[in-house]
Image (cartoon, rainbow over all chains, first blue to last red; front, side, top):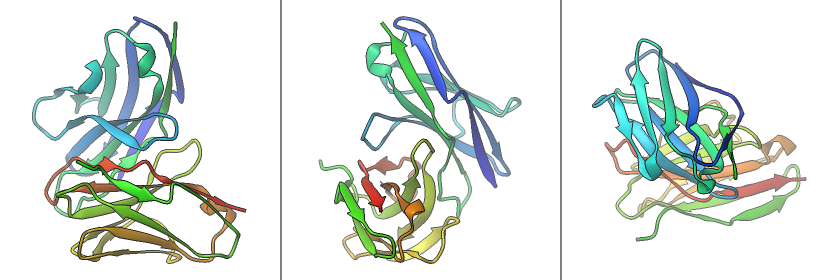
Length: 115
Length: 112
């Protein structure tokens, strides 16, 4: 069984400030981990993914995340927030083995960027 | 290159009715998954289709059924609609063996 907990349903940062969105996971098998972004009335767009290679993963739009097995965490960061980063962000987990096809999502964190 | 396309974008149905949602996967993709996203929640996995068969199913009742066609497109059918079925329904496609799922823009279903 797998689950994801995203701490903070709403995060506000000033433009140019550090963005930190938290994600903790639970998985009975080695996980694959993902961050997706959703803009209003849109589908989900993949920001980055961890699939057991490098633990520090770089994604699109300047985002990165670090897989920490000891902390069961996969927090998303960006050094400097931009107005266009305002959106909802979802962390997701899937299993890495055969038969692990579904993504299990957290409840999401809405990011607001203050000018 | 067209991405994942879903139709319709919005629809309104009455309780007890049936609905069919459609999805065309990204070119080159052969696997389609469906998710339900209730307001203020993360997407929840309904089921996945591969080689025209349901390969895995989430915790959804039998009122939710699907189909995959030889061209890899897919339908999601929901019978006996309930008010609680109101949600954004997302289709995601992948290529067998890939970890990267591409999502469509979704169908917003409102049950009144």
